[in-house]
Length: 305
Image 1 (cartoon, helix red, strand yellow):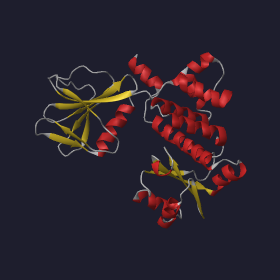
Image 2 (cartoon, one colour):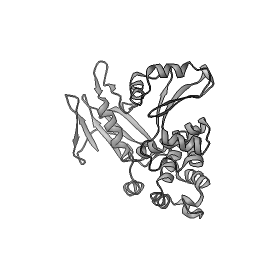
Image 3 (cartoon, helix red, strand yellow):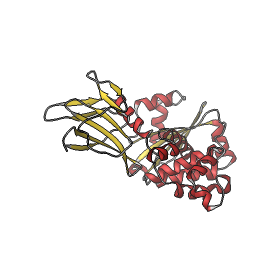
Image 4 (cartoon, one colour):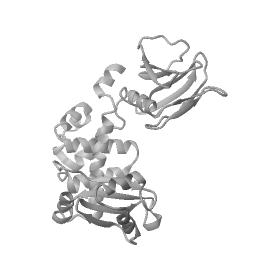
């Protein structure tokens, strides 16, 4: 796909078959953004699962790797004094366009083996040959939303070497796999590196009937976790990545009353198990959203073949 950065900072799509002279050979599929002063920005998949962006000059061997992030503008230097800034919308769109050309990251078989160990035949057949067929397993998972969410959460977590996330998903499947199905309201979570969350997060918590005074009072408690009740549900404050003042970050989690009653009163889960299971479920939701960014595996195979 070929785009051009316009003078007013917008991005226009160009014909797919347009010839771009002086462009070096690069892996395909790719995204190409033409820039002023004969520069270009090219994005492509590296080692199948990693995106890579190269800023170069047409007709020369001049190039350098750059990094784009969703929701953040990017300034590109095109020479000693020339530069352009890609808006946050453009960087997000470029990454989204490239993702649609790439297979989802991560390895299938290790993910499937972990999931089978957790869910048994409920997620996929015991037959080893079936388990190796990624397309067949994905088709089977479409019938079981919980297993599908867990599959992608585990797969992406393994890709990031985030074994704590894998543990959260395991806690969710072991203790609360059916708790959130059909719930009118799901848990919500916020993270903070400081004692109190940021302004936007505080406003969201206030919308759930927890005041700033409530948050400060929770934070003043010497032991964790801390639980506070309001008419809308329960707010949990817990430390992660260390103990007390040395913790790496704080997690604030809201649980609707019905979910709290089910996990705490009926299933007798500890506060930490509740937090981990709910967080694992939210990881599953986020993973499914992330999966939708990428191409279908069959489409990618067809293009590469």
